[in-house]
Image (tube, rainbow, N blue to C red; front, side, top):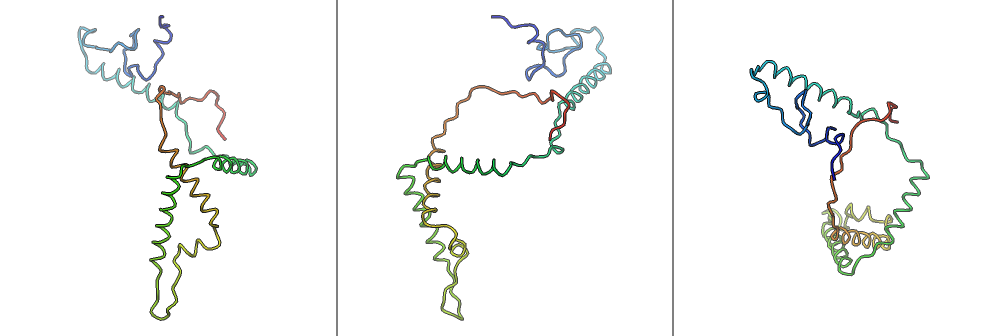
Length: 183
């Protein structure tokens, strides 16, 4: 029904940064020329500097220095567990036949392109292998390529169907509850 007075007076992203000192309503703009008989620019400049200094001080208090924070490395077992979980999740993704066919066509086009770029030297008639062929020898099996192709197709199809629904804004205050350092 009504709004509590404490929620109205708390500063947020809607409140004016340079409001008057004796102003009860933070949403009401401060107009010194209307409230004072004699407008003094020096007093107004001093007031503005003082209020801006308060803003700078509050910003410094809420500042989080991330350069001093040290990232924590995952323990090896946690990394292995995560990798296994990702493998399991990827194995559940299924793509439709059209997406799979498009991926296979792209792979075939890439392979054909690399075959055409093989270099024959003038001294010998033997063909040199391209970097693509050298790197692909004995490293990935055809089954693994097919599995990766399927996963890419499924991921691509899933990305085509993303729907993002706006819920609301999330405002996160940047202040520490305790003064303990971050490790």
